[in-house]
Length: 558
Image (cartoon, one colour):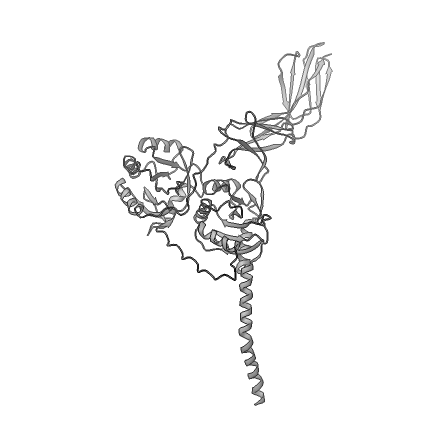
C-alpha cells in the first residue's frame, strides 16, 4: 500500500502544478510578443548618397519594406504607401530596402516610378557582401524564432518609437496602406487594459479582378508610363501589347483610333511595342495608325521591367495560358480604376467589343482605394560639359527652365555621393576644387524645384567622365651650336609630353613632338636667333587629351 501511495501523491501534485506552469509560460510568451525585441540595428545606403539607420533617435515608428524592384507585389505595396494619406506623417518613417542587390540607378528609377520623396529608398552597393537581404532574414528569424536564409517579398517590419521590433508581416501579398496603418496604430497606441476591448472591424470585401503587375514603360515622347493609372479619378487603362509588323495589331489600333474609346476621358489607352521596334519605327507607326489620345511606348531599355518581359507576365494571368506560351498579338489587358485586371484577350478585337467589356465593370466599379497624387516632374539636365585645370573641374550645362537649383554628385567607384546643393545666382555652372592632378573623375547634376516646402528632383542624372590636367612641367633649356636641348623630370600621372616652340614672342606655337621621353633636342636652328620653348605634360582619358599648364623659356641659339 505504501509503495503505491507515493507515486499517486506525485501524480496528484503534478496535476495541480502543471496547469499553473503552462498558464505562466503562455502569459510570458504573450508578454514577450507584446513587448517585441530590441532592433538589431542596421545601416543601409540610400539613393541620395546618405546612410540610413534602422534605429531612430526621433521617436518615430519605423516601417521597413524589404522587397525587390522586379516584384509586382512589392511595386503594388510601395505604390499603395506612396498614395496614402499618412505617408510623411511626422511620427512615421518609411524605408524601402531593395533586397536583391539592384544598383543605385535602378532603385532610383523604381522610386521615381512607384514612390515619392516621403519614402526613404535604400539599396545594396555590394553584390559580394550584401547587407539588406541578411538583415531582412534576421528580422524574420528573430520574430518567428527560427533559423533560415529565406525572405518573401514584400516583408514588412514594424519598429516602435522605443526601438522594439513589434511585428513582421510575411504573407506573399500586396500590402494595402490601410492594413499597414492599422498595424502602425496598434503599436503606436497600446490598448488601455482598463477600457473594454473593441471587436475588430470586419475585413473589407475583396475587390474583383487581379492585382495589376505595376510595370512602367518609356513612351516615344520620353515619358515614363505606368500600367496603373496615375489619375486620382481612377481611369480605365486599355493596355495593348503588339508589334509594328503585325497586321492584327494594326487593325485593332486603327479601329480604336477612330472609335468612341479615344473620346472618353475616363479611358487611358497605352500601346506597348514588344517586338524590339526602335523609337523611330514606333513613332512612324503611331503617326500612321494611331492618334494623339493613344500613348505609344517602345522598349527603350532592356531589363526586368521591359515590355518584352511584361507581355509574358500578363499573358500568364489568362486562364489556360502558361508564361512560356506564345503570345497571340494583340494582347489586350483591361485594368479598372482600382488598378485591378478585369479582362485579358489575345488576338484582334474591335473597339465596340472592348467598349462593351469596359462597360460591364465600370458601371459598378468602386472608387479607387488609394488615390495617387499627380506626379510633379522636373526636366533633366542637358548639355553637361567640363573644363579642367590641375586641381579643379568646372562643370557647365544648359539652364533648366523654372529650376530652383541643382544638386551635384561625384561617383566614388561604387556609389554616387552628393557634394553640393546650390541655387546659382547667374547661369548654370559649378567649379569643383581641391582635386588631385592627373586623376579621373565622374560627376553628375540633377535639377530641383521647391514646391510647397517639398524638394522634387529631376528623374535622371546628367553625368560626365572627365579628368584633371597633369601638373606643369619644370624644364630646362640649354642653347648649343644651332640647337637647343630641353630636359625635365617625370610628371606624376602624365603619359606623354608635348614639346612646342615659336620664333617670336607673339608668334603661334608649333608642336615639335609628342614624346614619352624626358629630353628633346631641336636642331638646325639659326645662330644668334632667339626662340621660345614650352613643354606640356599630357594624359588621355575616354578619348580626350588633357594637357597641363606650361612655362615659356626664351633661348638664344649660339
